[in-house]
Amino acid sequence: MIDFETVWNSKETKLDSLIEEVEKVIAGL
Image (cartoon, rainbow, N blue to C red):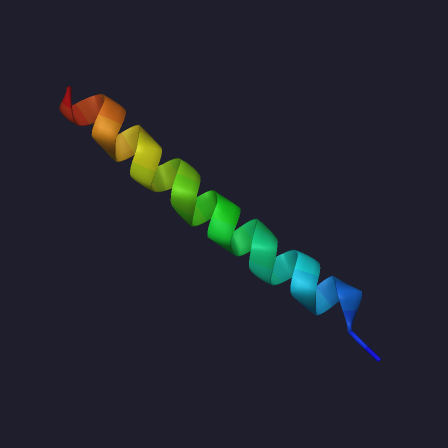
């Protein structure tokens, strides 16, 4: 059985990291 909470949290973490990267790019413009 898949632990949905763990999967969701890992996706959320990846999303946060992606947002941070985008903000860095925008700040660098």
